[in-house]
Image (cartoon, rainbow, N blue to C red; front, side):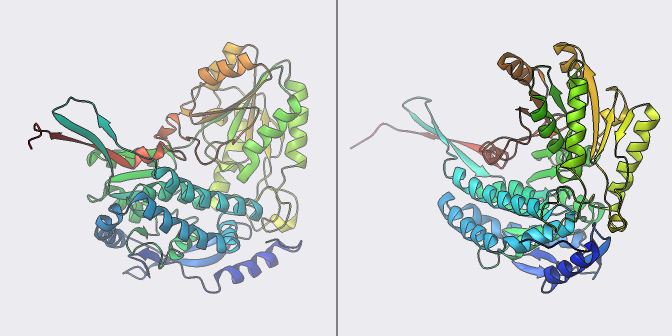
Length: 504
């Protein structure tokens, strides 16, 4: 699907009409679309033009209770299906989703502001995760324990039961594949709350499971954190929690999990470094690190928001980097071919990013490019923001320590390997990192010394199905995207059967 050049407002109004012609965004409970009992609804908006897309059912504890009840009723039959049977069911569902790729990509682009081409790629990735998890679930085996000739002891892997999941707003469809895919493949049933900022795609993929997934196996409750998210995390019948979002909310989810002694997976953001050593291919490093921050307008938990560059390479690297920032990564209509940056997803995020630019200037960092709205009246109504680069940043500045979640880059110099590692690790996060070097020894040492769940060498965002993703320190607990994720959604049961002497 592609869109022609034209007026942003006209393009988006036409797209909204097309995307919502037959769309109702209610809850999905027990295999049916369900409105809120109190009739309350809220609007989700297109950030490119700041106009409503569609109104959404606003859930409360009542809808969470109904969804959990439906999930509990469906659990026994779903957990008793074999991995091969779940594989067949989920692959049929995924095939249906692929048939609706253009529809889902357009909904995702309108809801989040990301370029349509990127939304298509991320939708395909979500489908890949659904298929990946059911594939590896068939190899998720128990084991026999050699306890002696008079006993037969073995370990079963069993699903926890009802998985409560909360999605972030920046990658709603892709993380649906990460979370719901793993839980369902392992035999759990799901109650999932999308972000109120981007609820459409998760709800729509659930609707497209009609007649394929058994009723109650997948349930969606839309709404806000206090009204729907908190009742979900606090619900006594939830057996496993998974959350992606901010550290403060993650702590609340972890506290709720502790109250009920429930396992929890948390992915809570980052302040990831990209370390450019003096021997690196600087042109490649500039291109890679620019993509690492400006993709999705900087709204990625693993964005490389701090570039640590050796002092001997600083000037050349900065010139190359600014060329990338000003030529390759520029705001445009997300529905147009070739657009690399859409708007920020909502108004509060725009205000947050703007405030951090002011903070950076007040702290004495050198704003070398960007810092505000892009030129052009076509951008006036949306939440667009220029690629922004600060140089001469100290690692103790707030713009280097705090997660901004926007297209704002901090460039920091170092003079030695030891200093680079100290700066890289000198934040409370530890989600991801990049290293640019042609020296294998530096690459391996840096990968070992940097405290992060993922370290990419001479690339960034180099993952996919089968590669574990998660963080150290305040970036979270647990791993997603890989075979070991099934361990996050199953528990071991040891069975020990006493054997008597055989009698004939």
